[in-house]
Length: 271
Image (cartoon, rainbow, N blue to C red; front, side):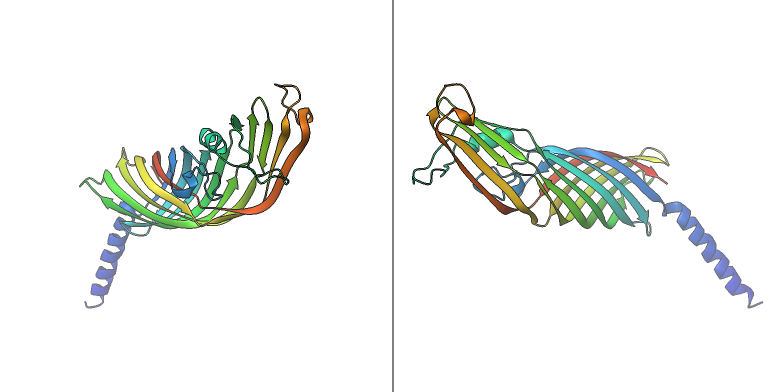
């Protein structure tokens, strides 16, 4: 009769494990979209500081897949994308305050006003993995709180910049080339999850996304300006310069940290 006891214990364990698997061990797929609020130097608006990104409110989208390890913990993988437009109005205003030393024969700086900056955007994409913890807030498990910490590589794109200054006495063009680079990225997220039924859930998300300092190499910058006024007022062409044009260029590395506070809503599917 003693040999039956291990069999009974094994049977109870198998039944309990199978029930537990059905109860909570599910895969979860979600899609979220929302707004990206740049912070830190990424949102800085000082043209003389090369680490200021002039980024403004943008958009984000992410697709996440979670595989539960137990009732509360899950492994999570996320594809993430973010776009932030360049704050062209702030850049135009700041350029008007800058001193440009373009004439090699003069130590006197030149100041140009009435800038127009082309509208461009920052882009960053990331693949991240990490851990998500889920805490149920209601007895029926329809409402829960999720917290996740993820890390992974990111690919960022520095926008090309072209700015032009128009006045009665001058015409100026400022250019900066585009660039791209890889970096380390991380995100910390908190979500409120509401299960509408056994399959679909609504998500309300808030989080922080950040990168290490990204090194954009060999970024070319140049500025060309008329000299001595315009031969024919209102004709904005370098061939219309009274004296030979003045010109300056350089190639340098630009280092930028991308960081943002993100607010989004999403739809989840239990698989």
